[in-house]
Image (cartoon, rainbow, N blue to C red; front, side, top):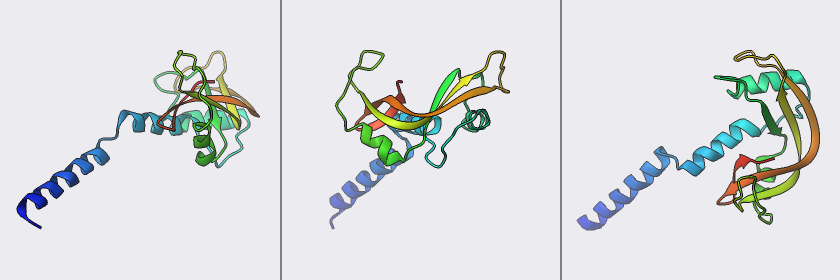
Length: 142
């Protein structure tokens, strides 16, 4: 390989490395979606589950997140929702998709203060709506 080819290869490898080190905003949004909403290894269920998970997933500081839903399905099943027909999101954009999933809805109880937030839980199978970018879930819409 000549010197020009080596330089081109090094430049390509450097750019690829920068992409891996500095995740795109879409990747950060996907990671946040996973942290806040995905728990495939549990069936969820009660207030203890919500209290522990909301704390573990850092949603009780600096304030108690009022409402959050955990999805109890494989990431493969969740990602497959992004392949369904797009519908309008609450913000008016057309990048939402819907499906039926096992979830636990957590709602903060009155009088809870950060960081000792307390939650009510409702575990069920229900219709959900998620926003997707490039066929990747990035926001829980409903």
